Length: 446
Image (cartoon, rainbow, N blue to C red; front, side):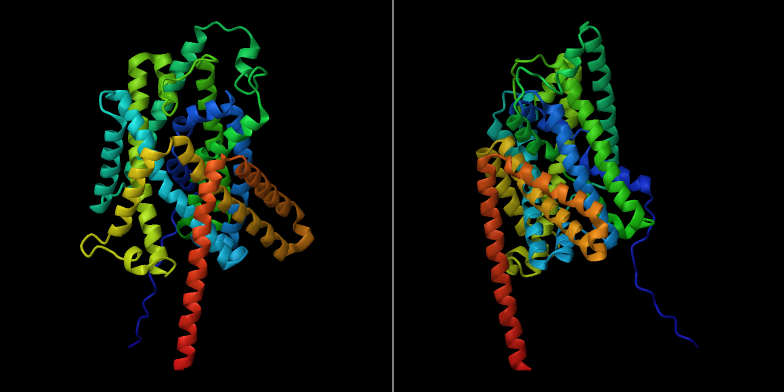
């Protein structure tokens, strides 16, 4: 009798090209530019659309590099994998460390925005109370292992799509009744001579990158995609493009509706007030509520994702394993990490603004994107040398644009981000020293 050899269980390759795009759009959220609209509007001096378009160019270059790396390494990857494989493991670690900052900061800025949105509904409750409530909500739900499923995420994304359609209809109706016959009025969101400043636009662009954060998540589905070498790269670029077109459309309508020179009641929830201007209390409540639900889901998911990332680093020895690598025996949740991030979110939301949080998040993302672009350029040089000049040029262009946007981040964000990066370098050196001692001990025993 011949013995049957059991095959190892592997992920099922069932995702088509359209499935990957849908996943990417759900991951980013179709309303991504709305929470940051007011901040970008203020920083760019009324040139949100222009900032979004420039950010789109930068992200398309980076999406192209992600696609090339996904084709070269057709397993679920990330900036950590691509930079580590394409350049050096130590640089891969730093890319992962920078992305870790993004994971920690995302629930923080979600808490800030949720608190501001809740005040729009119940202004009598102070901001500090809302921060405490949302930070506690995210933490307690994650401690109990409550996760949002893919079906719930898809339903939320579909609901947000309906909100966008309703907003667009109300905005077009509002603009129709304005009776603005001059073409200059409709071109003003792209270029307004009275307020234009290249430095302000580039500063706004460095924040607008936040709109596109998440497109790289498609690369983690490589093991489940059909024909991943072709479908994943195309889906990454297409998702980035669709996000950019939709984002520009949303902020274009927002800029046309809001009169130039008129300040927002609250800059962090500016888009909600734009909605109120075109549709009254009903559209105001609809948009505010929809974005609040989306931000709650994003904050919860990102806090648990950050906790798991810290657990992986603790389990690997990059962080103290006793604390970061511990799991709760019943829930199997990295409880210490969830509580730590909850504390960071609570303190951070009380100390910093949404703008600073967004810039800090982009600090890590842009550094990781630079690494992926460089890894893609190095891949082209290794595989074809000068014959691969065009892909190499595109990847180097992506790195250059990301570096330029990184330089345009606020000085405080760059200072705090650099401190985070320095801590990562110290941890990496400590880990290398520890591994060398362990290796020497094993050789001595042998």
